[in-house]
Length: 272
Image 1 (cartoon, rainbow, N blue to C red):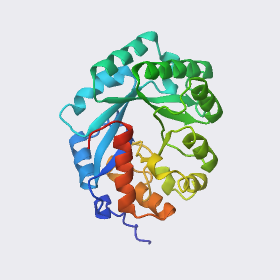
Image 2 (cartoon, rainbow, N blue to C red):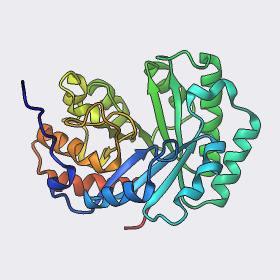
Image 3 (tube, helix red, strand yellow):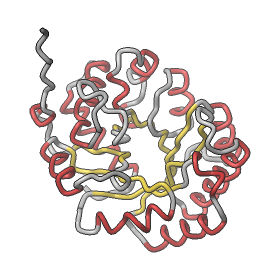
């Protein structure tokens, strides 16, 4: 009978408390937030971005973080929910951004043709409307795009977003797409899937992303990195993603950890 392989505890990676998880979903699950963020700090994660998927989620969940520091917010209507989005939602988003300084980006917004949860026409319409809102508010944008890259890029180009602060979240494509994103002046956030052996295109792409455009994310509770694949993800596991990216790039993991944390704080306009 084979002995079960022990997983390395994330705190043993020994990373300094300078890291940043640019994209997490901590409000939608039964997380013990104080415990999750304490583990994150113990594993070197100082800054976490929580993504609220629509104004209702924001209004129901923001109080969870009221006493928890070093968490900033993102707010946007996901393409899965485009068929249900209304003008009232857009107005609620505008009001929230005008009132809450913890909101640092419109996102995640974009297109998702992998699933058939909302018609493409609805997705495209509300993607454009949310981009217009971001421009009106002079806010950053965080993109969700799955199996819709050509349309997503075309809409962004038509909306004149080249050179504006934009982060391509959960990047899983190859070096050619990374180049198209980078040449428009945008940033790229890489999740734990980079640790999966079959993510060959992504693993090749991370070698090409300029150092000042690279961010890290968990997208928790999804996409746990090896050796925790299949388990519930959380910010404390982000170091394994950094470790693999540093290996692929031939860099020191402590240096990459610091730089990606700094990139996140700079992109989202955070202090320290």
